[in-house]
Image (cartoon, rainbow, N blue to C red; front, side, top):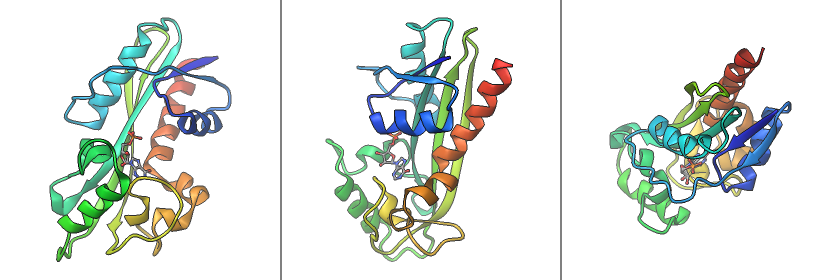
Length: 190
Ligand code: IMP
């Protein structure tokens, strides 16, 4: 069965294909859509709606994710990719986050991933996954992407970037949201 994924990121296609082995994942870039919703679920819905209208009768999926820091009132949140401005600059984002947390004892944070689905009958749903942890005092590790060198998941002493892909993919916000999406799709396909 085909599942259309709103992305231009080959890495995401690969990751989702591993978690949903019964599906042929087909990337469809939702070019030009404005992700202007106030939350992850809203932005994931904007993206999935943009492609689902072209794939009636099939499954369509989109995801949106980011980092929320308690002491910063949930920032960077939906602005995670461009926290330090345009264009996206991971090093600058991480540096700004550390600067904004200078002298702050409460380092609690979480990643959130929202996955929006449109079923073959047009029904929409959103599955959410979270991973809780804290922000390190300095970056460590070479793996992963984005804020991974700064995020220490609960129960661990190392950052996502140090723990590596295998461990990250069992506990991450994205893995949890995808697992929930898998249940939704499985339940609807029976
Ligand atoms: P996207 O929704 O996957 O495009 O992610 C938006 C932004 O959130 C990324 O550019 C990263 O800054 C941040 N982000 C999302 N997921 C992760 C993650 O697993 N590790 C590190 N940063 C992430």
